Image: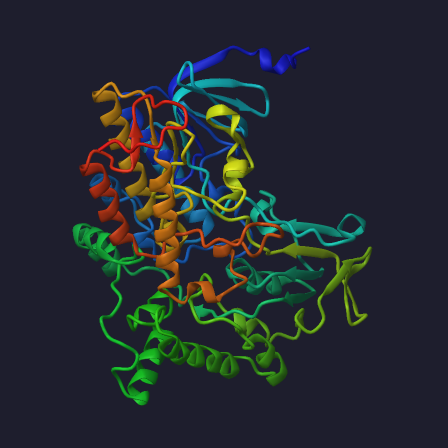
Amino acid sequence: MPDAMDQSPEVTVDAVVIGAGFAGLYQLLCLRDRLGLSVQVLEAGDGVGGTWYWNRYPGARCDSESHSYAFYFDEALLQDWSWTERYPGQAEIMRYLNHVADRFDLRRDIRFNARVASAEYDEASNRWHVRTEDGARYAATYLITAVGCLSSANVPDIPGRENFDGRWFHTGQWPHDGVDFSGKRVGMVGTGSTGIQAAPVIAETAGHLTVFQRTANYSIPARNAPLTEEFKAWAKASTAEIRATMHASVNGHAFMIQNRSAHDVTDAEREAIYQAAWDLGGLRFRANFRDILTDKAANDTASAFLKAQIGKVVKDPQTAAVLSNIDHPFATKRPPIDSGYFETFNRDNVSLVDLRAAPIERITENGILTKDGVEHPLDIIVFATGFDAMTGPLLAMDITGRDGVTLKDAWKEGPKTYLGLQVAGFPNLFTVTGPGSPSVLTNMPVCIEQHVEWITDCIAHLRANHIPTIEPATDAVDRWVAHVNDAANATLLPQAGHSWYLGANVPGKPRVFMPYAGGMARYRRTCADVAARGYDGFVLGAPARGALEMTR
């Protein structure tokens, strides 16, 4: 007998968009207001914000400078909003996204508390049938996933977790009413970007904070500060210049990489350049030389400088040695920026456990037991263990394409897309910032705007020409996947073998380099060229089953 929930009437719209973060909001605006389509956005949370809705852990902050971490499609919006800090915190970003939703009256087409359970393509009707966990059903010609790259929490399966007498939290699923650490014995597992942001704030109120470090990490001080009125005025007067720089840069940031090699200067000059960048703070550090991510010897100079800084900041030599025992080249993992991370280890109420020397054996009723036989008593455990990045949010939904093939089966050896935008065998399914696009290697709003506008133009082309479907040709997908691999291998990025860029933080996940490392500007040109050549590499129309021909 069918589930009663599945008997709710199916709502038919032109497009269903999954997610109400940066990508979902802009995609709704473009499809509804620019193309005049009927659109339903389905959002699992009870408000807009996407990644920032869920990630409200202590210290959560953007690592893109605020004047670049914004929509640039609307000049009036740029002039109407003023950021307060160099690097905006989670609460301010949420205020911004709520401001955007209100300004463009987007909420009327968003259904909140609507987590998508499944989406299935019906070839006969050329419709995607989408069902939420509460049984609501929707049918749409176009299905656009705007679920974010870092929205599927990776909770480690450590033995004994269910027996812990205290409370545990994951930073990506943080309680909206917060967590009181006052006087508590807190253990934090993970020292990636999230852990590096959270530790200093937790340490301020915790009775004791124990940081469990498996992989030592570089980090550069953010030097965050309130924005001056002069800077705010400059940013509002320079929107065209800022936009042009972001569109021309490799990573979509509002600064360019210096066109010089680390080998072009003397040792003393290089040291002075690095010191000035350290003092300035932020991600601009990696823009000092063009070959930091392509030449190991050049990278070694940056890595050595950053490791030396840890020794200068951390007072205890043994702790400093563990923190600086970094096994990968600088910026081959996500390069964190921080607000007092290394200084935190100078506090009397903070200690460091080296999990390389003594891995976690299990969680006990009282805390965490490491393999050297030491039990660390804890009241609260914080898992700052990141995400099942890029593919996780997509595979969490039961997406089924043509002939009953699931996305999980199609990607069992790793994600395969064309331009990070579409998957062969899944007609009219678009993935905003999907695997195979620059996404997490960029300033995300820049990448999101480009993706949303490309998808919008594509759908406009289909409708204007009465073309029912679009999907990539299999050979185009194969060529793009090969190109993504070549682009990664032209850099040092694959040398961080335990990076989430490769899915290495999730047990059993295929080891495939997922983002496109060829640069945002190059990617933008490629996408524009593909569209200009009649969507070269895509199959347009209603192809026969298994068709591999490319429409020219």
